[in-house]
Image 1 (tube, rainbow, N blue to C red):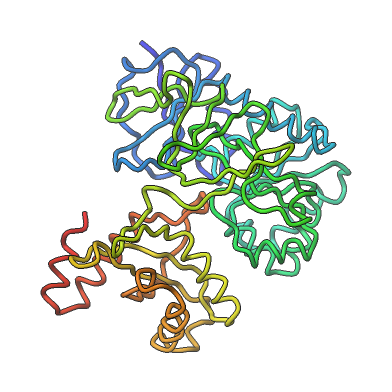
Image 2 (cartoon, one colour):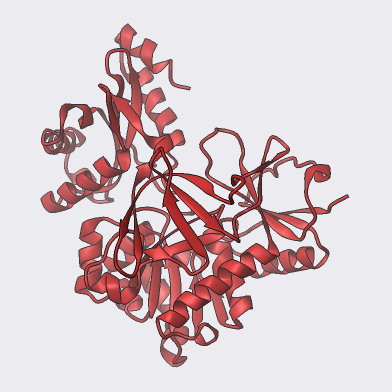
Length: 427
């Protein structure tokens, strides 16, 4: 029987977690990486293929627990492809200092540590509490960034980047990096412009659990001269667009299987292509192909016969909110079922810590005024303030969770029977 090890990845004890992972892989086991305080998925070892490898939960759209199986070889191939990308930028991977602020139970946190082993480079974990405090962060990493004259690289999500850029010490800290990979979500235009103004060497990128992390990236030099999107494919990756306008990927490091309800499923077709859930556009240039994303197909909202990608509305809202200096820290567009329109929109938002100086109804009035500029089907019908609206450890807002929260809030607050009826249709 194939051996399985369940590993709770405690952010305060990453060294212990990596030691358990190494020992497990040495015994040819599959190691399931789990966030702290989460019950392990009950996996039947009889269905697992030969190891060693890791099992990581992926953000699928089926609603069922979706786990990707990656062999150690897949992770090696990913690390070597990223290393070659660095060489193309004139950076020797083995000379790098890798700082890692992302959780190990996500592919984005596992891979920086794995790369360090493949490249024979130095790696340092950054605790989440330190990452949220620019002053503590500067103290924690001062020696690594100033005393050791080597190129420093880091992977961050937009939420982390924005918090640091807005703080004087955090901004100076970011300037010490040779490469700042940014993934997990789109970067707002205002954040891009601020990063360019301060000459931050960003490398916006795209990757998934299924692809063992990054498969496209923008070169920092191209970002600084105005390139946007997610960049061009790494050397071991092919990309294309499917008939449904979603991104297709072919690479020899794709997860061969995903595990759903204790059954293994192939993730690619007979030709080796995996179809993602991201609506994409490819721009072909003389020497490269650039990837641009429009949104998730499973996030698409149908309102009044129009297909809406909430990510695009959110980006426009963020731009307007920043222009008007509104104290909105986080926001999310969520669907509410409607008999006439199919779906209508709810805007969930969280204010900055000092945002409560202004009354909630005044903020909502200002948000409504901004949204009047949008087409009718893109205007939110409901505006809900939520003090707990925050990204998860991977820097993403969990849309299903907040959609259910919005449903419950509206059921509590409204006395209109028809509205309650249609809200109850949301599952």
